[in-house]
Length: 280
Image (cartoon, rainbow, N blue to C red; front, top):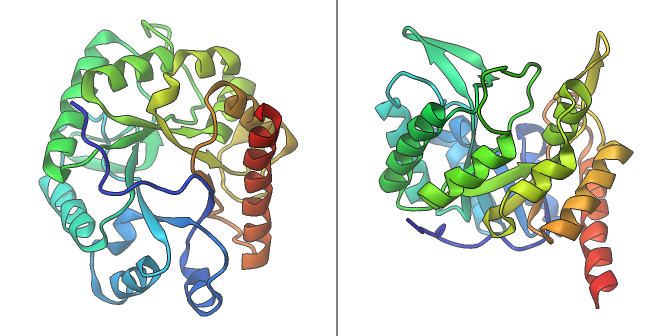
């Protein structure tokens, strides 16, 4: 299966657009190629969707989901999938993405992005669910690598190997969250270089960059701080091995003033431009 998204994101830096910045972005129209929003915030239509459609007049939109639970054992929620389908029809996004995690069990939805073991059984399960989503939406789905605070001894492959095979089976793409990989490298000893080498470069369609917090010596994926120097270094490594891709600055807690967020996006753009200059 090879279903491209309706449009293509420009290969530039973008920002996660959150409610505190809606008005200022629409009034000032900063120089950005694209913005990303959380899909579920717009399922109800109304004023939020009206605002997003106004933003869509100026910028390409990436829809990023946090609630589908692709690895959950329960059937995909039809109401959730239908709401996402309606939103895609209205917005015509340039990309649609979702976390590769589980979030429900025995009828309960858990407000978290939970890891799972990378087994062949899990691979078959997630493959079937991604195919179902792509068939419903009529476009390619990007799946995001997860920040995790534990690993499973009975995993049969690495996360990078799992993602590589998943893209081969389904035609889905990868949203490569560089900060998530750094968190896993620090917390769990994941080999970041091996992950980058394992995933197929052509499947990577988008990067995420964000800041983290520290709790009891553990790195926590808070999206509440500037991108740290080590994540910038890992992003540079990804650029060398995979190449430039649309790159998002995520900042979801302790949200700063818009100029601070735009400054981080400018820095990401400079990294991409430096990569191009180095290979010319």
